Length: 391
Image (tube, rainbow, N blue to C red; front, side, top):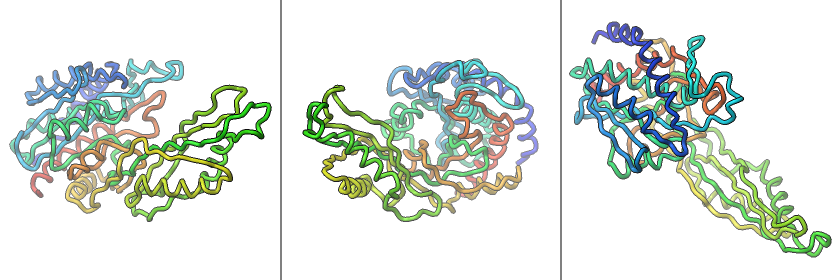
């Protein structure tokens, strides 16, 4: 395989990559409501231009998921998926540049979604353009995805695709970890939101001793919880579980001692832990609150996921990053969640790998380094060729 020729073509196509990223950023696909169809038109036009077969899947009108195919039907099947939705821009005054009018400066593309995840999606499309030229030399099916709803749980995106459409590749690479092409995500913590309700007794606020202040008891619980490390077994990749009190409600009026107050605690937890085991730890804390009466409810959760660190996908990614760009990829775990989670739950070997920085994702003046978008293509293409040879 003449990789020098492929890499030269990738470098010569840098302007097209930049223009494509900027075109995607200009489409305001803020989630909610999503409106991914706005950016989806750019993706389908690109596939048509380069003769790449594609399908569109919508759980709800406008919430488009576009899958482009190279070597459709060949085995193994490898999915590479970016997402089209972005988070809100926040206060426009906090941006140096208009969030949806991308600016190219100092080797970076600035704009909402540049690094999460439209720059990566553009790089995937550009890689697909190159792979289409060498389709007969690819030993696998390559599926390039531009999907919906990643920022709010993937109900209209990857969850829909794997559970209802039946998109079940053998492998997947998700460029949504902000690792700057220097890390492979092989493990992700679970996530659970737990509501803690504190019960007290109403009284007139001029006679507080006749009541039991539910807010006071809840505050005492929170204070006692702060230094507690949740019960867990250490993990080789993931750090200790975390907990954060993120929502609080309580009180009915300024002149009534509150008889009810509640918080929602967000916990990121490790393999071996469960929502139930976490609640048992919380109950032990609440038992230390004198006269406290508490109730615990699991609102929603995602299980922790991981893949074997020595799997073939990790192996070929590391080999090609080193061989062609002299990059040593490290294995990491995430406290956050990517759509790797939904794929791994279906038995698919899925890892996170790609350009961008998590330090600027969701921030004002979000940007992506153009060099990293180019590097990504130069690692991905030989990786897919080797994967086809090794499986």
